[in-house]
Length: 196
Picture 1 (cartoon, rainbow, N blue to C red):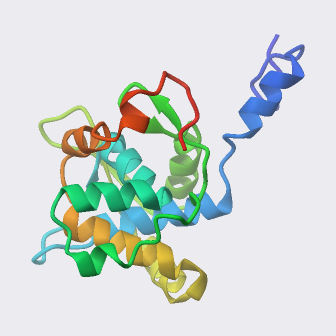
Picture 2: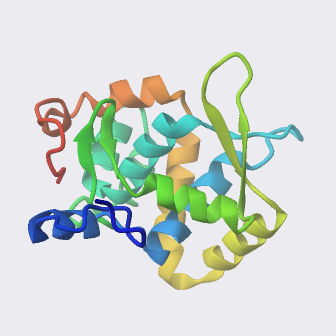
């Protein structure tokens, strides 16, 4: 029988409860995804834009969270040495809770994080034309909050990486997935394996 408060089995072993708690959304994760969506949904040449789909969101978030992988992908795809020097590959991941899933790195808390951002009116979502995916963009209040976060020094490294992602890796989700699979640590990992 399911527990009405958690939606999980009442007599579930404690190990499962522990593994589920690893993927609960945090405020830091919500702030990071808000900044990511805002960076990739800012108007371009006056035209409204959306971050196109969860595959693209997950791959960009993976590269944002794992600086050593970001540096390797940027180096392989033409980033300038000056821009590469802005990334510390020895810096630990921002939030090492990603697992290998169907299309590469994935965080099971995405659904809850996106639901929270959408439910609070910080992000809007709409179906993308000619695909079955959804596009995400910050609302007016979401963009204002993202700007305040950027002014906070504790988000400066994230903002710097986001600028690099936008400059060099504003590609389709499929292209980003292929880039990520160039990393042996991802390509050779098993489904549901923790990524490092």
